[in-house]
Image 1 (cartoon, rainbow, N blue to C red):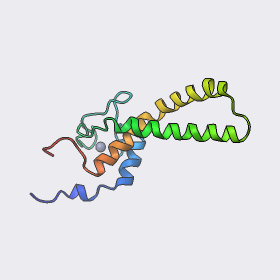
Image 2: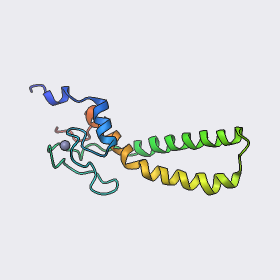
Image 3: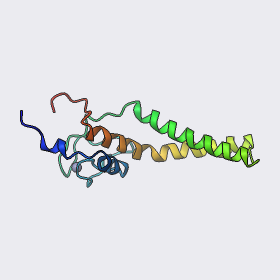
Image 4: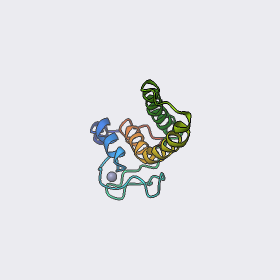
Length: 127
Ligand SMILES: [Zn+2]
C-alpha cells in the first residue's frame, strides 16, 4: 500500500484551528456541523469522510474541566477581593457557567475533531 501523502500534510494546529471555527479540518471551507452538535458525515467541499471521528465523552471532560477552572478562578478572585457572596455564585456564576458551556461546546467539539483528524484517530477501520 503506498503511503498516503495527505496524512503527511495533516498539521495538528491548523486542523484544530479549523475545527475551533466549526469548519472542516481538511479544507477549512465547509461547516463541520449541520445541527448544533451533529457533525456532517462527509465534507461537502472536499469530500473528506468525517463521520468516523467521534469525540464521545472526551468532549464533556474537556469542556466541563475548562469551564469549572474558569469559574473557580473567578470565585477565588472574588473571595480574595472581599466580594465573595454565595448568592452571587448561585444566581450569576451557575447560569453563566451553563451558558458559557453551551456556547463553547460546538467549537470545542470541532477542535477535538480536528485533533482526531490530524492524528488519524478514526473509529472506521477501513480508511
Ligand atoms: Zn472539507
